[in-house]
Image 1 (cartoon, rainbow, N blue to C red):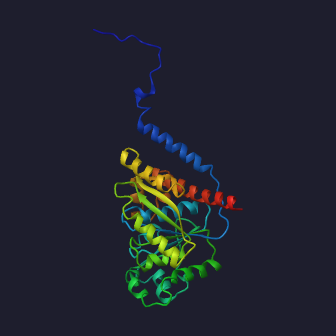
Image 2: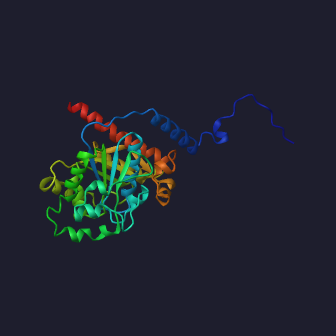
Image 3: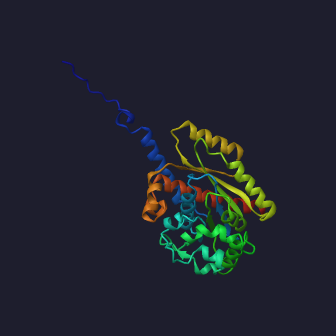
Length: 309
């Protein structure tokens, strides 16, 4: 029979699973939450109008639009989300009514209804508002063809609204195509935010999107700029995600955010409850990542303003 001799030596934490990848990940998430609690940002100057666009589907475009909006609202910004996608997913995620009989962005574009009449406050935050989409928007592409100043209808309506209803941030969620709805978003915006999925075909079609932005700059909106690129569905366990990240940062060093959005069950679940992940589970990894992205967007703008002053 063997007997184990007692020892006074301390047993390493790793023997009890305390120094595992999961434990380190949880510790890192906890420290990031604490860091966010100490962050203070300001929103000054004229409204920033973003269009969130990517012609490639399934990259987390709408998810990014609504979660950044919610995170920015939590930071104290007055935020308006314009749902320009006929699917209406942004409206659903923000918990606002968008049935067929609801006054919507369609009425603004086609019937010149005042923007203020379609904007609803999201139940998530007193700082968060939404101009919803309805099923009628699906036919707007065809109806806009015959309209006067068809490329500028959203811009003019939004500018008129913002004079009497100031907002710090406007986020326009586009359909995944380059039609008249997306062109209206580009002409109404001053900045483009592109979510890029951290997977093999991430950069496919990006050159076409950049070409579209240049065309808009040349012919319709010289103030438009690509200001922000956000990596989504990032999986730190794979070499591929890191390779995509490195390539994006090499090509767009000034636009790519340091924050990345991980694959997250909570992020996927939230819309089915009519919520953003910020409200659904604000302590989850996805919510923390979107909060970090929101802070970075705000801080970059503040730093740029100071440099320009």
